[in-house]
Image (tube, rainbow, N blue to C red):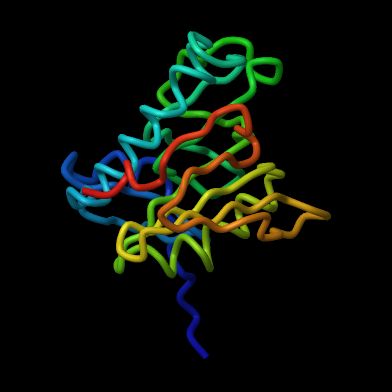
Length: 184
């Protein structure tokens, strides 16, 4: 049996990571990944571009949300970076002044890649559930699919899944768009 304590990563450890990497702390361990590949970045950018006008700006939809790219989420001892996240403005009336969020979002979107799919599904989704994030979307550019999960009794339930079709999905049912727009 080892008498050495395992080093738990700290925020200072993340601050020392070079800017070209995405750094997170998951279950006490520092995880670093390269910036997203173009296919991944496009899917995330297009998804945000579809949601922001209707839900963040309210210009052609109901508004009432903050929708952000790659926010740094301080959720208990874990520090996660989701591809997209959204907060209902009734829960978070103003954006924080600090560079991170300690209020869990209402919705997260993770764009899966071969390097991140397992971590997103196995590690991050349970952490989001533990923080009572209400909805999670998993976008898979390789399979060209969207899985929509809702939190029920602290567990994720698959609400719907889409492939190459016009979609409308919780919590953003007022918006309809073609999933095909996300793929190059």
